[in-house]
Image (tube, rainbow, N blue to C red; front, side, top):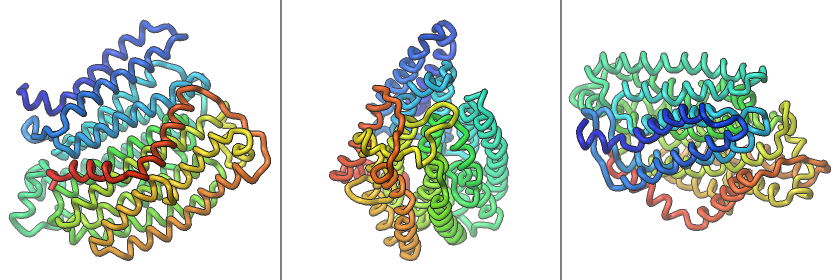
Length: 480
């Protein structure tokens, strides 16, 4: 264990160690005091976040180049740790209200965040596979955490079976890439492919890896699991899954394709263009027919995966790619903040046995709970991409990068599908303010704080977004 190896994975080591200790400590915490487990889990994430922020400016490979520490990994890890804190805040009262208050919930969440962080730092396809399993297996269990609910058990089983199937594509793709280049190192793959004409085997291997990542980020046509899993899993789990898994999946996709496969950009660009366009179109069009708020947000998640995928399309253009990746990171931040806020409102209205999850249940919310309705309105406007919200700024950065890369047609599809999305997002707003009803909500201090904080951030950061985009741009400088 050298000093460099120790420093490279220090935050990850702290978090995994904390999760293991928490698993033992929780055995001695009484059942009526499981909130202590939540507080200890949040403390572990906060400590890890502090260590991660202290590494800003540090860079270098570790463990013989299998992992790396750079601005990109530090930015993504900080975002993942914040997402973990928000996930605990949303779950704090929810698991107790739904009869799911068990200490292993928070330990599983910490282990999943650990896998996501390793995904962001992976510089070798073998480590990518290990990280993918580390983040996925705890999520499979969390999706089925409501053991007495048949829908939750079904969600966990579907997620596990399809996730294992998708992981097989990653492993097979890695094997083909190794056969084509003789290495699984991202830098080694780039060197081997650049020294000669990239072969068909390399392109097929990259395509199979794309399938595995496409499942994790819920891109079409690998999205079929998303609506059922999002609806069946406990809402607090879905909120964390929708943000955390997407951030980790896109982080790996950005690093792998931008650092290992630029030589086959001509083969992959058309595929990425088609996947991004289909994902935006299908996600937004099918969402129109949804009446359940969780399924609506599931298809919304699919649609936003398409928007973020636009950042990958020009990955073979070295002049445009830094700006494009920075735009993708900015949009991930925007989506994460908005996502947690929207799910916070969903959790506030959800009642036992799946009640309170229909869009019609939001009728009268604007009259009875004006602040909660105002927050939900902000989140819906941000998901559309309307001012004054962070979603608008994120889409502007994305569309600009895509146009600079010469893919104006894709940007037009993005704009048109955003207009389509206005129909189903604004339907929620219309229901809250223009329909009569008596919605029942749960007022929990931590839930109210999280929802209010994300609503404020969604508006305030949109007014001064330059600093965040500058951070994202600085984070990707050494990536190319």
